Image (cartoon, rainbow, N blue to C red; front, side, top):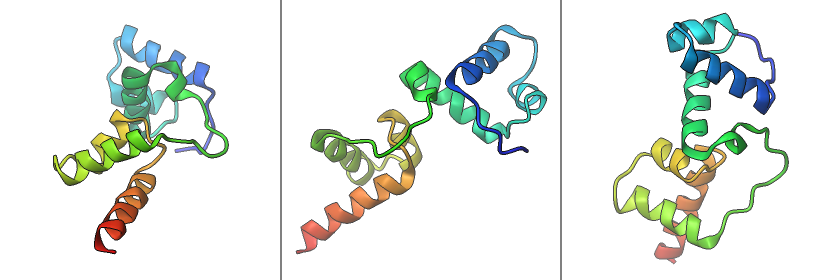
Length: 110
């Protein structure tokens, strides 16, 4: 697959093509030169957070203390997966969430 960057509008057009068309998710991804896992992520992000989730982020995203606490709590206390919590709260990556958990655990052990 290519490493082509897609604008939010292009991603939305491809998602709408899939939703309206006769093609499977896999066929749509292949027809547009996108990996199936990437296409699935686009669709989940769009469904959970709208068009803004498809936009390329530049710079650091700032998250509230409340969001961080809620996300960490859902992983540690409710045994939710890193992937599901990252998607739910629109966190930029699982590694960001892992860092929050590590910080949380280090504060407990101090």
